[in-house]
Image (tube, rainbow, N blue to C red; front, side, top):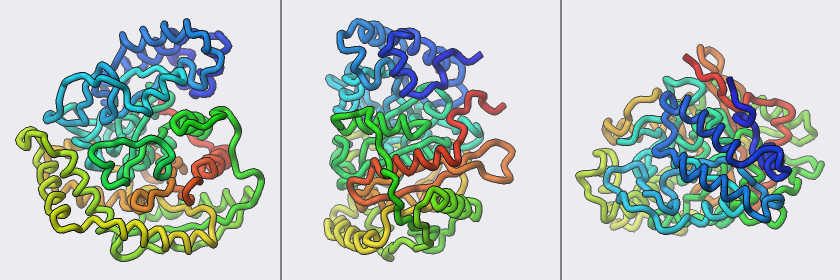
Length: 457
């Protein structure tokens, strides 16, 4: 039996709590019950904070401003590379400290201030480096197909949302780490543009590529959560395309030469274009202007950022693939291969392209999610090749610092389970609300199953 509030949206829950139709404790307790039932099969959480969450829910009920809180009583999961007061931040690694954090990360503080209740810390790959979520703390699986990885590095957050363990979760994205697992788990994930949401991730956020953002089952919840994270004055206010036709470009060519998108994923982009044209937008095929050096520029930051984040950690406590990544990152740093001019040159190309278009639509992934192996026990080369083959479409927008959103787009044909497909929507700086407005239009015209309430056998 599904409890009354499990599977509901964050918007619905907050509205009911504000009206005192349900208590925060009841909402949180029902979601904790859901976690207890399905978490052993999914592996989304490193730590469930049952007692602290119930205590926070009781305290929330006594707040004088309950009726004004945009996320009143909404259970939320937090990625385990963000400090949560009183809890260790393990970042998927045996090498990190088990000392509790003394204060919340700013994004966590904003969620709590808006009335959200933190129910647990979600699993990540070690140091959030790779595109599958598995580590010494366990393996995270897609709730739609338990044989497949949830993706990474926000795999635990995306899986928790898809399995209805929480309605929303906090993730972050340095090379696709919100969008990749959102695609694997059939949910909506937004990487905001640079500076829109407080980042403060690791040493330098992989040279400014990493951003914190929302993972949700629907556009309205993502919009509400983004508003809280970004500090918008009117977090419940409407957004959208304001009825104006947008210029939409469809692109299926891969940023990495020689890695084509699977035919069904390219078809999902074209199908998205048909729906957007049906909504009155002007849609055209126009390939994104990826330069030949783009992948090297992104990978250099990925390597160097890992080396910086691993500094001070005992190397023998790191997995071999992470040690190798950090060694290469130190070499990249010494060689001076991470240069600000790379980001500037890519942004200039994009500005020319987006002078003709408002939004770009691409596949989110090139291939279906990989199997849920213990990838952290395998070699560095195998991990990098797997990541490059299946998830090459996300990194350009981290290098640019532009907002990008992963959106459910139907199910893969030919799979026994309901394996989700996804498309990626990209807009220039400041376009987060525009992307969410388009997501709402697509959700209305092409709705998706929001949660895997009945997990596959």
